[in-house]
Length: 297
Image 1 (cartoon, rainbow, N blue to C red):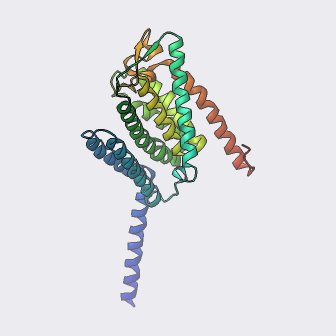
Image 2: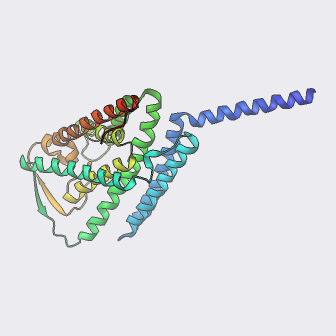
Image 3: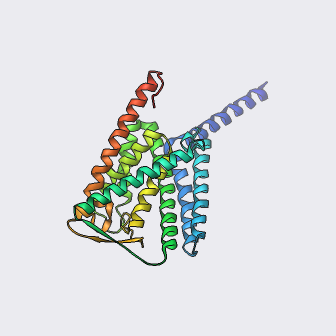
């Protein structure tokens, strides 16, 4: 009898230890950090590999990196956070990505055109004769950044903070961290970091809340960086060869200075004009869902 009671006690203790260990891994900050570390390690490894390669191979490696990073994200959310991942569902991946790309392209094109109309930018065809290299390298760089940053910021961090304090807090904190993360870039200032908070953090966060799709935010982020790169504008301080050369004239508040387009007041205003309707649409959708009414499209 004593032996049986001792066995039951041991099983109970083991069960409690297992439950405590399981609760530890399900804690939002824990799975957020674990997932982010995994994604960063994969990104770092493939960055080192692609630096030594030329042609289309680096782009292929970036696609492989993206697949592995999304796999880490999927495994983290499934087995540690114990939740489903509809935000990376394959069912609407194509349409959401295309919509995101169109949104990002329109945003950057409109911002650059306004600055140009105000005399801040003038563009000239680079005529390097190596258009394919510029296209491939720009797409590869923009794609890698979009996948990694969106998985970490809108995927892991946003949803971890959402569990603590709700969506408004998640939007505020991820936007702030996104701006801080760009402070170390070439030409960065406190203003450029604040601009990134509003035009990138808030816009991408609002886009995620509206569409509930990382495909959409990755598409938007990709088109944003790719369009800047192809226009020859520095991408958050990173200068790369584009299809055009851009001549900058006037105050840095208009042009963004050495930091590039994101340091300009123009995309801040344009992004808010896009973000605010997204946030209103999100609020409306939540009210409709709460009332159990069909959402009109």
